[in-house]
Amino acid sequence: MKILITGGAGFIGHNLAVYLKNRGYSVVVLDNLERSSSRALTKLRELEIPLIKSDVRDKYILKSLIEESTIIIHAAAYISVEESFEKPQEYIINNVAGTATVAKTCLEYGKPLIYMSSAAVYGNPLKTPIPEEHPLNPTSPYGLSKLMGELVLEFYSKLGLKCVTLRPFNVYGPGQSSAYAGVIIKFITSACRGKPLVIYGDGLQTRDFIHVNDFSRLVELVIEKKPYDEVFNAGSGIPTRIVDLARLVTRLVGVSVEILHAPPRPGDIRESWAEISKARRVLGYQPTITLEEGLKSTIRELCSGFT
Image 1 (cartoon, rainbow, N blue to C red):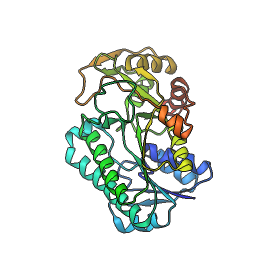
Image 2: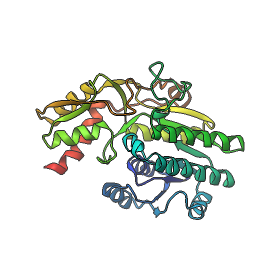
Image 3: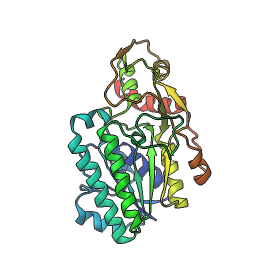
Image 4: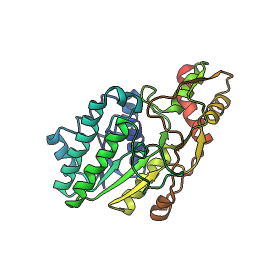
């Protein structure tokens, strides 16, 4: 089985490529390298995973790659909530147009598609944990772009496209870029440098953190079981308060630094954690990496760069 991963030199993309390659799959990566990391490129090179430098909106290169693939995983996207407020047009053009090009091409060649959406499509939840049937009401241009991508797939599925949508919550792990990373990498980076950890808001807001290897296992289950036309949350199912995360990071890094508070940012959501019973029931998915275990491995790699 040959798998094409768009955005395969990004954080999730390259970790997923490495995971699937080590599981025996033939993997090809497509990425324009605009936001790739040296770590990602090194890992892909070490495993001899082919990397094609191109934008997903280049339909001619995309067509040849999709034609030769068994299944396509579409992970290419801009991912920063904060940046999306500054550059909403770029997010809509890049994320939505890219998804439309991939979806249309997959339909033309009869190839199934796994789409990386986001928990950001839910917005401020009416209930927690958040089930897949929860109303969709994004509070950021990023979340809007991901929701529009889902609507694109819904349209093409009516024409015959076989697709599965995953809604990742807070994916973390080694190789995550500090420039566009979530709170975990920012906390670890600050702690490793002996600098204060900054929490936006009071720190009592909750998030659902899933290690990238658990996420990759979920993707593999989708590949194996082919639950087309379904949507699945991708999370741990466990809420963690941000202030508790900050304390845990400082303890694991072994430093005593201040935890500071700043005003909440636009688009920040108060409570967010996933209901994952559907993934358990349909796919047999069960997260295995605890937050502390995942943080330890991430800290080992990230903090080694500061010693």
